[in-house]
Length: 187
Image (tube, rainbow, N blue to C red):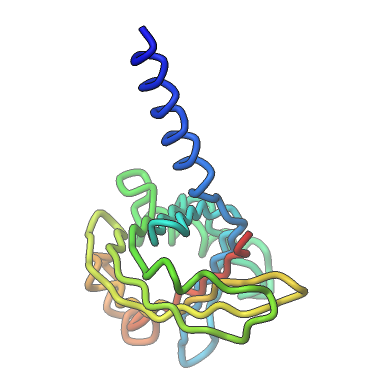
């Protein structure tokens, strides 16, 4: 009988430690596409990012329909058209509703105080966009902003490599490369 209580206590301790070690982080994700006429930008302020600092694991998820486009054109109606085309024609969000990333880093790279200077963190993982998964390696950086440690990363992607079809008349001007900027507050 005492063994059952001991085993249950040990399991509860392991589970609670795992839950404590994995933190959901406030995150902002920005997108930008350089074009001859104008840079087009998008944002997602409700990205879900979890970091397990002890194990050196990171997971992120964005709902495609949560991405917004603002101030790219003179009217909000045109921004709405861009948003709808992005979701329906390019990202096909009814078939591929999420963008996700699962990766790992060396756990010691996040053992920094808010007084430490900018530090690089090597992250390797799988980025899934439009139903296609690719292994990527990026260098993220930690920095201090308003007394808080921030994790920043820039990820360049080629939409074509993720099976995103861009009409040729648009592809000549836009979408050769999309840059994803990620900023998370490390707690």
